Amino acid sequence: MNSIKAITLIMLVFSLSFIYAQRSGDKGERWDTDNVLTLTGTITDVNRPLSTFSADDGTVYQIHMGPFWYWEDNKYELKKDTKAVIKAEVKGNDIYPWEIEQDGNKMYFADENGVPKWSNGNGKGWKNGKGFNGNGKGKCWK
Image 1 (cartoon, rainbow, N blue to C red):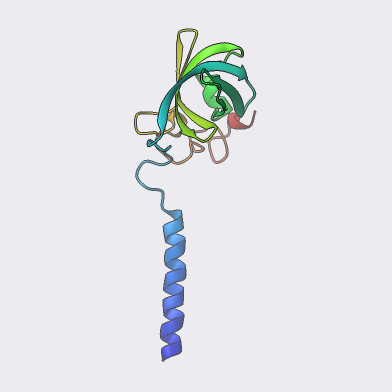
Image 2 (cartoon, rainbow, N blue to C red):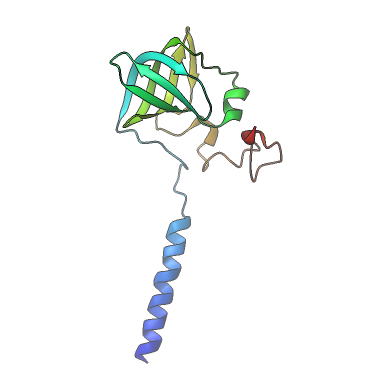
């Protein structure tokens, strides 16, 4: 009898761990809002998926640029050796941009809650027809 209870308990815990791991939350992917800073400096290298930004204080950051198709669909372009103002989540020397302003043009990557624009608040943005599990356009792997 005790072994049946033990097996039942183990199966219950095992099942709940899978259910918990699959939950998606209410808004999908979000970036951290605790360390959002506005940085001024120069884009020193443009190379997807990471570009390099040298802040005016001398700190060098890697910009995580997001999906290629998002840049292409919005006709965004990051210019090398050009000044920029970046509002971003900062994690060490990595930045996840919310907004980038360069040559008077603003590019938007996350809303005020830290939800990436390409995700539409729905997971990682892969189900919007742009990549795996979408409707076959597959532009994110260009």
